[in-house]
Image 1 (cartoon, rainbow, N blue to C red):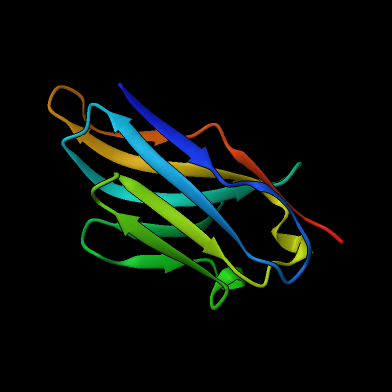
Image 2: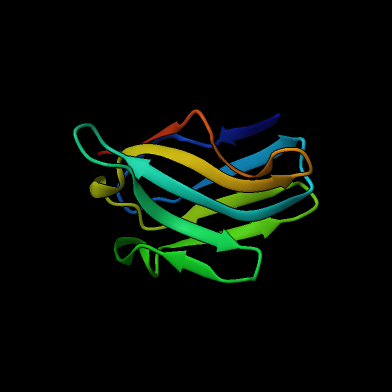
Length: 120
């Protein structure tokens, strides 16, 4: 069993920064992909940023130059560093991971979500 624990959400003003952290724990042999998605009411969940085991990272166009991810393999963590936040970044942010375990193979997991609100 795998658990994704998110932290770091909150209320900030436009132009400010925020860091989200996601830590994976449980039955883990290797992590193939970790990423952050976000969702606002009435809209589909969208990719924000993603890291793959091959070392590549991908970002949504709307966050390029403002958001970066950093991977901490010792913690099985993926942090999302968000700068120059805009009101359009307001959403529930979800951590995602594709994790390999001996008996289950590669499986997708989601965190519970953490609210980020950007408002003056």
